[in-house]
Picture 1 (cartoon, rainbow over the protein chains, first blue to last red):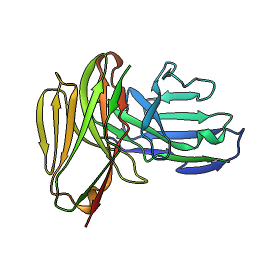
Picture 2 (spheres, helix red, strand yellow; picture 1 turned 90 degrees about the horizontal axis):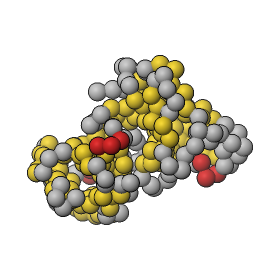
Picture 3 (cartoon, helix red, strand yellow; picture 1 turned 90 degrees about the vertical axis):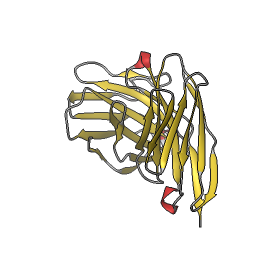
Picture 4 (cartoon, rainbow over the protein chains, first blue to last red; picture 1 turned 120 degrees about the horizontal axis):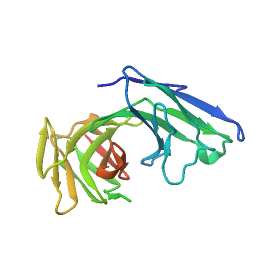
Amino acid sequence: SAVISQKPSRDICQRGTSLTIQCQVDSQVTMMFWYRQQPGQSLTLIATANQGSEATYESGFVIDKFPISRPNLTFSTLTVSNMSPEDSSIYLCSVGGVEQFFGPGTRLTVL
Amino acid sequence: GQSLEQPSEVTAVEGAIVQINCTYQTSGFYGLSWYQQHDGGAPTFLSYNALDGLEETGRFSSFLSRSDSYGYLLLQELQMKDSASYFCAVRDRAAGNKLTFGGGTRVLVKP
């Protein structure tokens, strides 16, 4: 199993600004995943973050908008850049194989 | 790409049995997972099927038919605490541990 923490748990931001979300895992992992979950919707994978290499982004998500860092095997950050109200979502990180473990999420509201 | 279909909502009474179906289309199917998510919470892993058949874990069971690209989650002896959203997700052989989630089924348990 894995225990994952995220910071911040929630934030309210103004449009045009950026927010960096932190994800900390209690054990070393090769891959970390970042998801977005819009209100009442399913989870959509944004990107996969590997330590020591650039993140792999899914269709519809680009590095300029969602830059990701992965400085070591227990930590990653996701930045939501130049935010608009459409970016209001819950952002979750996860780790694991067959069984994925999710962080508690960051609830972002953009005004 | 991958796509998954599941009903959007199911309502049942305490003690009843609910079956949530999931049909999928994927290019390199590896396995089908099920996750539970309570409002405001993170998704938590329930079960995983890589082979045809039924997997039973307590009150919850999951079934897979690879030839039919179909699976279901069976919730027995429903309890109020089972009110949550349930997501099926597929692992794609060509995409490592990446998961693609279905739209989710909201289960409402009534007294």
